[in-house]
Amino acid sequence: MQAKTETQPALHPAICDTHLTRSRKSARLELAGLKRLVLTGFMGAGKSTVGRLLAERLGWEFLDLDVLVESRSGLTVPEIFSTHGEAHFRRLESQELAAALGRGNIVLALGGGAPESLTNRLLLEQTPATETVFLDASFATLFDRCMLQALNAPPVTPAIAAQPIQLRPLLADPANAEARFVARRPIYRRLARLAVDTSALSTEETVDAILSAFSRGSASDT
Image 1 (cartoon, helix red, strand yellow):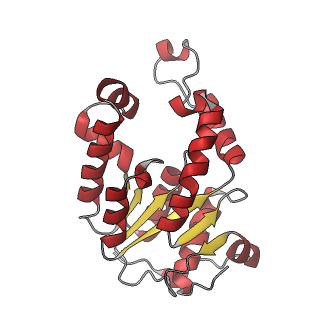
Image 2: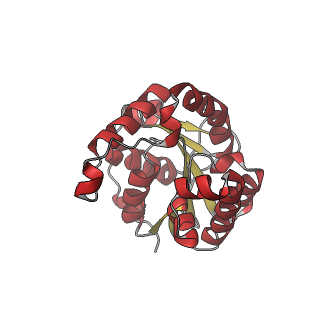
């Protein structure tokens, strides 16, 4: 189902000019003929929340790569890491990415570490009708979002409610998390043809910014 870009709301010029950065790799960004939009970025970037709303606006299916891996393995991502190690997880991740890219009319949210793999980058770059969008923000902003998510997440059961707050493993060591962020950010930028600074944007505004950038069909350097 093709997006009806003509009905998308106009954005305030500040959102269009200040929050979007387009890659020099291409002169145009178009939805016409596009079958896949892939969202990349560090933890806390909002890939899942933005992805769900973006898919809804496009009339497409939303997929989360980590969820696909968990469904395939029957384990959560932390359980895969602790039981089988990161190398095993990355193999499953690449397999699920290849399978997801074989589908059409999808918005796909990547895990934060997925673009570090050359195999994954080649899959994304060489799959036709596929564009990658980088959801960017400062590390401080992303870290604060993750902490708020952990604090506000509703417990699944009373027993879990009585336990200490469980943070993402990487958040337990903020210095290591920031080092990972610094190392990954240039990879996100190189992989994506569009970067959106989400620091001051709501989920709805971020989706508007993405759709506006593609519907305008231009990619002037910034």
